[in-house]
Length: 180
Image (cartoon, rainbow, N blue to C red; front, side, top):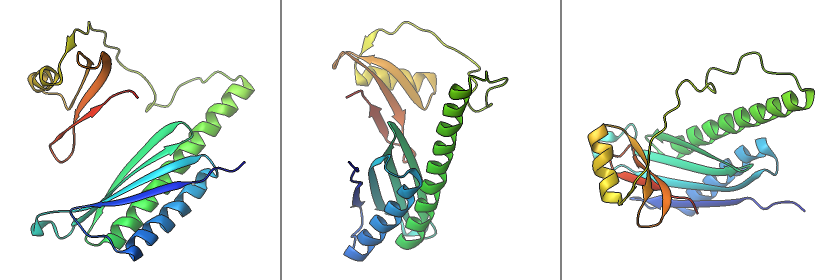
């Protein structure tokens, strides 16, 4: 039974023609072929900068893809929707290839039972922190994150009784990650 790839394209602060929507769907369905049937959903958000001064990076494309139980996220900016879509689809293709190669390499290592002499530097854990988490509200977590000067903060949300991550987005606003 083959999976059906779902591509959701939406716009923020801009109009999106059917041609642009079709082009986005075509580009990202092509990029998803790297992973055969393992890509479940791709969410594409196209946003236009409110400031006319940002003409070189007027359009921003954010892509989030659910791939083989993982989430891949990329961003691209350009002066036109077509250029931003092109850059984003190329970046997504590269990310998917990299993820696929890593998964294949890990599977080969497990199958061959060859211990890894030295892990990749990007995967090496260089520090472990442990701390007591007291329940706090989102407002308290925002204050704590500001006081620490961090761009993210992991906390136990008193309102939902779950662990959550508060983070600062590139646009300066805050985001919240919660388990489903």
